[in-house]
Picture (cartoon, rainbow, N blue to C red):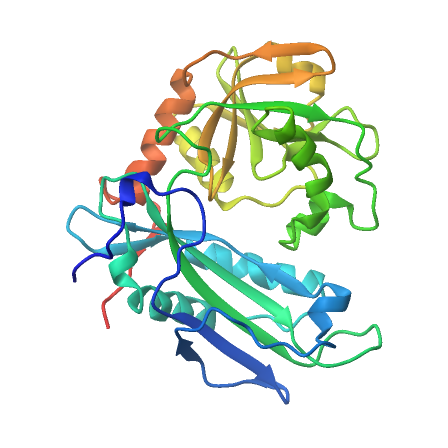
Length: 341
């Protein structure tokens, strides 16, 4: 199939209109028949529950083109499982795993010409989301839902080469102790609560904000868009353990790769003072993949980790990217070739 007329190697991380998106309604206690549409507009009643009480969740995953031209997903079933957990958290009707995976296949096949060519540094981002579409005024879970999945070809989340260096600032003045906490809202895949800190950080010239815990404000949680990891000087992979952190599928994968490389993996509380003793640090997630951190500003101190990716971060990035792009055999069963229909 001929590719879309796009400069795939220069794509930003942003929305690009593609051919079709997938939609399915939950109504009268059951899921209806899915449809593919070329419309990127959602008709919603002014009393739709998602507009007033926040029953809206989303996921994000990527599709990669292999050297043989076949398209493959990366751990999509984990996204399906996480979306079910998010739905449970916000008392929404969950999208069954089989339905989620079928939606991935149908949506990708309907937009194959937008899958970036192998080796160009871009991928096809898949955005599934679920909204409470029922019409009501009282504060109750919606009785109707709309599940939508669309795709867009995207470049790196942080502008630069495949492994971009980023700079963060520690945020300890934003109150994260809301009823769910910013992290727990993110665990249900809703990032709006984090904008209050992220936007000022970017205005100061930083790529992202790094949050501390809401209770004691001394333990690292995560960044505004990614999980956090550090490599200690004695070669340990450490990443925060916190109920306020979005459970990153990418971080889950990298922890496995780190173990297989002989690194000791520690998922635990990380005191902010430990930043000074790290050899490397990074932000990790579906969009960011692994983005090594060049510096973290904490109060009046700039903690530097270097101007180029550290050797451990680089090795883990290459291993993960090789699996995602079909360059090596996947020994974990994380990837799945999407058959053409």
